[in-house]
Amino acid sequence: MKRGALVGWLGRLDATELAEILRRRPDALSSPAPADLEDLAARLSDRAAVAGVLETLPLPALQVLKALGDGPMPQDRLAAELGRAPGDPEVDAVLQVLTQRALVWSDRDGLMPILPYAPDTGGSFEPVPPAPRLIPADRLQIMRTATERPVLQLVNWWSGPPLRQVVVRVLHSLPPDTAVAGDSLAPLVHWTAPLTAGGVPDLSEKVGQVLVDAAELGICAEPQPGYFAIGPAGRALADGRPLVPAQRLQVRPAGSVVVSEDPDLLDEVAAALELERFAPTVAGSSEPPAETIAALRAAGYAPEAEAGKVTLRRRANPAELARHLAVPLQRDASPLEQIRRRAPRLTPAQAELLAEAVERGTPVWIRYVDAGGRASERVIEPAALAGSTIEAFCRLRRDDRAFALERIVAAAAVQDRA
Image (cartoon, rainbow, N blue to C red; front, top):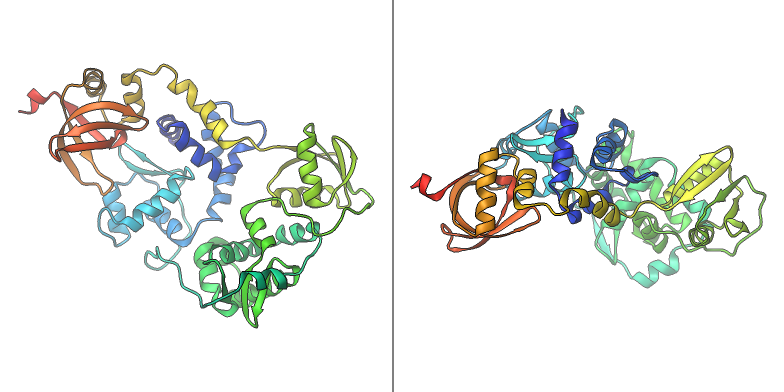
C-alpha cells in the first residue's frame, strides 16, 4: 500500500527534486542502479536501509517521526502533537530533512511516513541543538598541530565504532576557526545522532576518548589543552572525500586485490588508500578483503567482494540517474498528465478543468492548503506549469504566485462558485 503511494509521490517530483533525494540516500544507488521508480521505491523503503538512515538523523527528526506514527497525519495536527503552532518554521525545516531522504512525503490525506517509527525519543520537541563551549582557533595552528598518519590507518579507525564518525561530523559542523571544549560536546553528539549515542554508556567519557584518539591520528587537533578542532583529514573523512596520502607508496604483501575496469578510478583509489598497483586495472592491498572493503566504503567508494577479490565501481551519479528515472514520466507529458500526477487530491474532472485553464489561460477557482494546513479559496489565472507548481495571477492577493500542485485540493469553474 505505502510502496504504491511512494512510487506515485516520486513520480510527481521533477529531476532536481529526485536528485536531492538520491544524494541523501546513497544506499539506493548500489550497482546496478535502479531501473525505474518502482525499483527505486523498493530500495528506499527497504527496512534495513531505512534503519541505517535513521541512525544518522538528529533528535528532532526522530521526534517528528515518532509523532507521525503510522500516518497519514495532517500537518497542523502534527504541529499540535509537537506542541507547536500550525506553520511553525522549525517543524517545516525538520519535515524538509525527512522529505529529502524519502522518509516522509505529502499524501492526499496528510503526511505519510515511510515506516512507523517506534523507539521513544522522550522529552519535548527540541529543534535547536545544545551549544557547547567554543573558543577561537587559528587555522594555521590547527594544520601545524595535526599529525600525519598513513591513510589506511585513518580510514580503518574511521570504519570502527559508529560513535567515531558522529563525533568527527559534529566537529565538522561547528563554526570554522573554533575549537570546542571536549567535556561539553556529549550533549550535542547525543542530539545529532541519538540512536547511535543513546546506547553508549558513559557517553561524555567515550566522546572524550574519541577526541583524544582522533587528535593522535591527526583527524583533529588540540590547539589548547582540552579543546579540539577539526583538521584537514577530519574534514575529508566527514565529507566523504578521498584522503590525500600522507606517505609515499610502499610495497606490501597483498592481503586482497582490487580490480576495476576504470583505470582512472583505480588511480584515484590507489592514491587515496596507498594501494600497490599491479596493472592498469589491478591493485593490491595489504589488508584482507573485509578491511579493504570497509576502508573503501569509508572513503566514499562502492566496492563489491568475491572470493578475495574486491571489484570497484563508481556510484551512480544522482543527478544523471534522477534525469533518467524522471524522463519516462515527463516525456511529452500534457498539462493534464502532469496535473494528474502532481495534484493527487483532485478528482479526474477537477484535474481536467484545471488543465484546460492552464492550456487556455482562463480563470479557475481553486481551494488551496498551505504548509501550515490553512485552507483558502482563490481565483487564479494560470500562466504555466513549472515542475511541481503552477504559476498564476492570484485575484485574492492581486499578485503573481506559485501554487504547489499537491496542495490544490479542489478546482471548479469560476461561474460555478459565483
